[in-house]
Length: 467
Ligand SMILES: *Cc1c(COP(=O)(O)O)cnc(C)c1O
Image: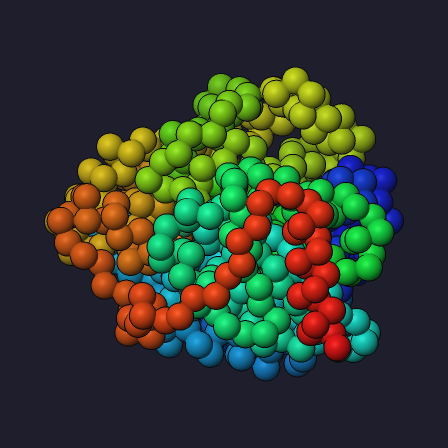
């Protein structure tokens, strides 16, 4: 199994290569050179597997034997052992045909744990075999940083420095990062905005000598391994509802397009998915694209579902590459024009093929509060991201009523207690294993948004641990 860049000018790599590289050298994203496709009999053969074993089976289709399924299985059993539900990602019925696929039973209470928890053992395996160490640097406004820290804490081969904007993450999100006292983890509170943090990380990667000295690596959502590890839960849900002998639809609250791209990949692999609903908050670039072929950048506005507050969905490039018939030069040119002009020129034919599968839906803050209240009235407590997904399922279900709609429930309601309180008047309790989060000691360092200061910090952190 080889991976090629969507922009066609980076050398192909194997799975381990794309795991460690993240972004391709030409600025493109890695995609499988060919998609594995399963027959109906093969899908049926996956029914009833425990989640970690199903995930190992699916992931092995993308690793080309390196690591193989027998090696992956114990790694994934370890990755999901700490989840708060024996099914790992349980399905909860909300309505006659609407189900919530709860992806928030991991250590940081958001769906990013589903992929990130497996990256820890994967990195250790690959780096130990190669005798290498890496330094992971990342910027976060909340969920990604805590998921990365939980996944990589105490790993022998990895040092982690996560930058967050001081005072601008929620207390739950900050504490989930800063109360991890493992020696290989460092948190930096930057005097600045999330964009300042992200610029500092980009600048570290652009500093070639520093990048090489520190062996910098990233676990952001463009990393192919994260996408591959998000495919199994779509498979598990579809099989549970009768696939491959029954079609299903998914509704996915979307930011960087990573989670819904994994659902698209499952469909590309032959899983009978009739429709993919894309939920957005007021930052609705994807809804505008799907309804009118209008992919125009606008300023990001803060909302009650902050993990979807994005201007450009970075993983969309992978879908674009497919929509353009895997024409890498055309993909590269389209992305360059998007960066330069703020508007993505997608040919009508490609747009039509997207609009046949995907449907966009936008919900503003008032709608989010109303939807959380409606669900609460029916006995289900949802977080503001999940509420966008359930509202989308209600607003534009597939015409055939026999097709169930599975909503990706991407965060635990206790992760966004203010919105839940505002909508329902009740307090969403943290699960028992996190109940003392507010009493745990925190550790973080403060720095100005200054590249030299941040690089010096990263170097000290990495050298101390390598010694
Ligand atoms: C990251 C995140 C999303 C968006 O996922 P993408 O893969 O970026 O589309 C949605 N909800 C929650 C709670 C998240 O943390």
